[in-house]
Image (cartoon, rainbow, N blue to C red; front, side, top):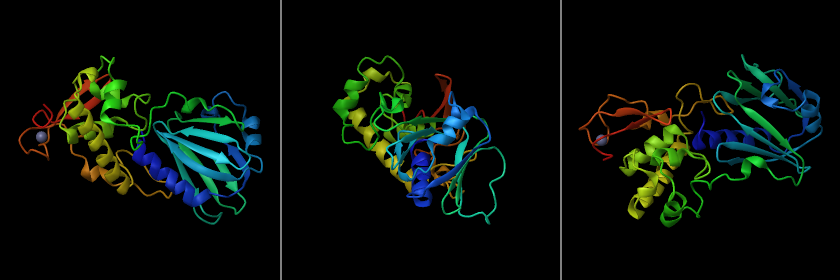
Length: 275
Ligand SMILES: [Zn+2]
């Protein structure tokens, strides 16, 4: 599932390709991403709309239009956008679910093999449900060690699970939480409320360093992540623990990376560096 660096890479790509363009037609090839919306209702929403901005909120993509309307997309497991600059360039292949065509004949294809992605539409000045209760972005100034300690003070769950909770901090997922805790040298099994101020500060610093580096490499391609331009991310070369179970730790060179299950998710960590 795309996390902050991958979604940010997609948002940058979308901005580059479709900003200020007018939608002239929408083709729906599969209704699942539309949820409860009727196909015609969905298509009508975009009539003559011009893309004003595209932003990332945690792992959500927020498209805003000049009329004040909004579309919120969550890509989940396999959702992706592919841009085609004109009708002469090759069409993306399988699992196309929605096609947006613009006034300059370019098109944005939404592909989703497993059909878990969600689209929601909002009229102008409407409260956006997805934004309510979403924790701050990892780079938000609001996130400080005392703030973090306060947020997790009643959480009797593993620290790793607290970091995955989008209500605590938004945008983190399994790959980056494993990498962040490794960089911070903290055991992922530590109970969240027992965290010290020093540990909270290490987590915050590591989180920003890991994410900045991942953004520089356009995210991580584990299965088939691609940006809007169909280029894959390269951060997987720099992963230190994620999917390295049984391999020697790149940080200490003394222990093997262990894999455990926490809340049905795999956690990778070094028992020597993170004790
Ligand atoms: Zn180690």
